[in-house]
Image (tube, rainbow, N blue to C red; front, side, top):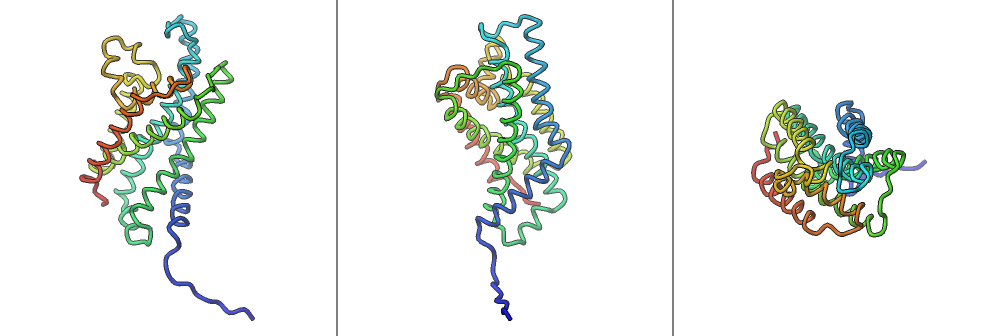
Length: 256
């Protein structure tokens, strides 16, 4: 007969973070609205943008529309998950007391945040695969030499900046206000934030759009896949937005 030896105490932090990330990922993928933002809208924007630009003869600096739009739509997909989806999910977790109850569990706040980041990374990998596959089916010819490390840094910096902004919004507004604000900001940045189209497409407003987190993330992805270059300035802009939003979030976030 084998005796049972109890092992009281909390599980290791790494195991708790993996469990939290797994749960966050499942909740995100089960939500129809989140899937709409994460996958459906970026794919529609990519297909519609490429077809429309080719029929209208839109000038994108002498480059093929699919080569310009695909990196921008990958940036849009990262923005949708790291900002809009995270803000809405966190806002309603505050409303329903989920975060408050997690505070009474052995999972520390750092573990909760790491779990959310892990879920974001998993979803973003799936988004990049889907959008890149659609782009390749449309004829996308990315410049791969030097592109992968630059694009990876762009995704990480963009996730940092937009996740910090999403938590800032979710930490100070009520759930319904967070839902409205996150969707409104998403639409504004989609249409005027130079994330899908280059800042030069916006005329004089492109000077401002280049310094927005959306414009910086779009420029980073285009620099990586169009020129195979390391986007120093756009990455610094993203890190600046992320650092500013992190400081404000730490000072203002309300856990309940």
